[in-house]
Image (cartoon, rainbow, N blue to C red):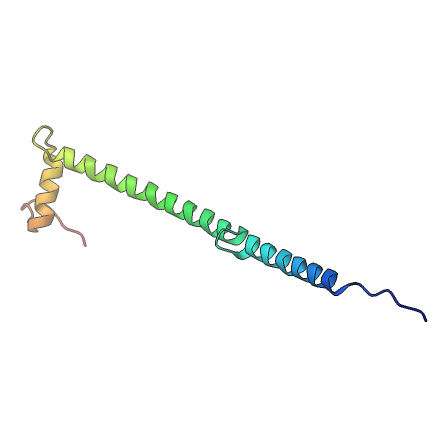
Length: 99
């Protein structure tokens, strides 16, 4: 009687489990919470937030400049006149308004 060599059932199960774990960890490394795709999303979001931060810092610097120019220590009369006119909606008699 000839016997064909069949792999043992335990060996087949071992390699099937090892293959399944390999597939799982590969998937997790690419698309998981800490995977490559998530890393790319975080990098893009960081660039967007850095750009927003720069814009907000510019606005804050601009507001600080205007606030300093209207303070008691340094009063810019032209800026004060411009702000008063825009708030009150008043003109001098020698001015021409273009809208």
